[in-house]
Image: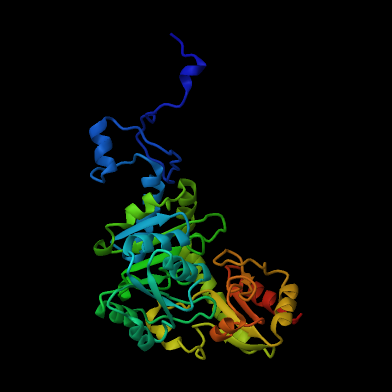
Length: 391
């Protein structure tokens, strides 16, 4: 008896038999999976079996990407989230409760700082904002109820370097966990867990993927702190998209090549900018003039990152002139793309701060942040020269 069109609605399918397997990982867009029986469903939903039931709780593409990232970080466990901010939320929601206290770096990404300060206040969680590059000040801010110390490997946009080992020692002495945002480094430059951090978050949207086409985050850590992380990701709707995970897995395959080229280009760009008469100061850990240069040498894997920040004489007008002249460098307030891009912290990432707060961090109208890409060194340097008015 032939089937009618109504009978051809999607049903659980069995793949055709084959003796080979796909070399490229497939995409699993399924939102739900068919179970054999109630016992299997109960076991899977309880975490006692291998397999999937509902995409929000887990899916193959997320697990494949998470396993790659776990190995890159040398972590015991890893989870992929829908964005870098979702990764921060997963840590916060899984590790804290009302009555806890956080010690938060004053140089965190603006949205992260907002979540860990004003948003946590609504949840009954206290906080102290401190310069985590000052280990003494960080230690003094710790309390008996401090649960998390949160810092960035390389800060945004002044590229200060956190002493992860020293921060871990200080945090652990008071029973707190150290959380490191490693987005400006990636595991190709620094592996914070090996230096003593308890949890690491990444914005996979940036250079780990590197192609400006996904929105994902990552949390890595050890078994001792992991119990509630999967629950937070699922219950709070922080889960990732299969297609984005598939794209990021493809991007991750070239991370080592892209990082090597971008870091080398950044070193050259920083050295050129440091010699230019219109540039007041350059922030780049690979320069001997950078205040954290020796720490970066000890802590990083032979590279100093691909981000370069510099300050122009003449304030906002000078920055606007640079943007106009550097026509080959897109003004994209993000980072980690294949091509070189630029951002203006005063008008984008740090626009929510007062003038005094920005000045306190060393950010003014003439501050430009470059995300150096993988173009030829000649192209990158010439594009910057054009922005500075050198033809």
